[in-house]
Length: 268
Image (cartoon, rainbow, N blue to C red):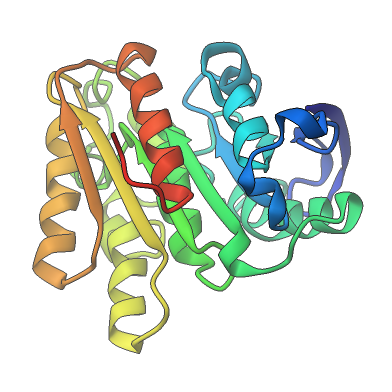
């Protein structure tokens, strides 16, 4: 795998934005699988709260899987943004990931511009970001993978100024900065349910969706709320759960399963 680490000036963020790209363009022919008989596909990987793009390579088996499946990996730094566009100048993280970075890496590295070759995946905060970004740009992303997503919009909407930190993670002012006015959140486009409902109402092409959550994860019930929403509204999805908390002991097996799902393979 060839590794490129760099930055470019982002109009969305109004500053240099950092990212890494991993390309399977130097895999020895004797180790190339059948997936090298088709063009390289691209997977955008979104990290969690307090994390960085490097977490995906440091803590998972994705580096080897990308070589096996002829998959380019793009790992942006989303900071603690929830990958949402904010009202303040320099806070358009949704635009950065969903539009600007996609265009930049496609032009710079010659990656496929086809929807069917472009996927997005995230863990925790990044799981929320993957769902939201994929639903916001269904013409760009054909498949979405969400692992232990921080699907906390209903809890954020119920927050009050001066109240306790949500899940012991962050306070009201932080979530207000990320999501906008809490009392308006559930009807806004920062709520993935709003985006999904709009796609369904329009009869638009729906990105395929893979959700996974550990049954002991503190975000388990938040994921069940979203799961019930999808079921009630007829949005098709693949769902996986099993014993586990909010850590890589649960996520790593799911990364392998989700990779098979992305490639259209039967899971083992």
